[in-house]
Image (cartoon, rainbow, N blue to C red):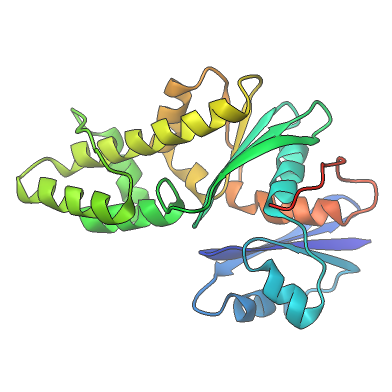
Length: 258
């Protein structure tokens, strides 16, 4: 049986197809101005017996195409559990929100906390700050790690942080030091969220921001638990959705309305 999971995020749409529990295919594309159209393009030519959608745009796919959906909380919990069964917390930083999810021994969702009312610490925030400093997104993390000192950033509101960064650049401050300060501010905020949810066991870091090596390193410095990053962190939600519609493959997860 072929089962597919599609994660319709604010920045990208991701697809994972499983056959008998093994990954058969993966696809990813930018969400663009019409995430539903992007999802349809990604699904073109894909033959599957079951399809389950997750992500912030899942409701539109359900309404238009009658595709069943699952919350991002359950999808990321299932995907992380499959890839990193030793993890007891999932940290997902996506384009528009961040979330920390506490898992039980069998992968069951015990509790979670989300930052979905502010762009601070999300992929969008990282993108805006990188652009403000004149860095590409990947370059942003690499240059922060090369900083000889760190400048403290006082605001994580996207509007105020952008203004603060612009002022620091105008004063002639080193862009690398500013980048490191921004990463540190995000890491501290994120570490606090993780610690409020769970203080035990390894952490599975998922979502596109998990590819940011500076953020991973700073989080590991701040947290007592090991921070583990799967090989393709941006695909974990789609993988979890595919697992949750595969008979006998996914762990039982608590129902949530998040």
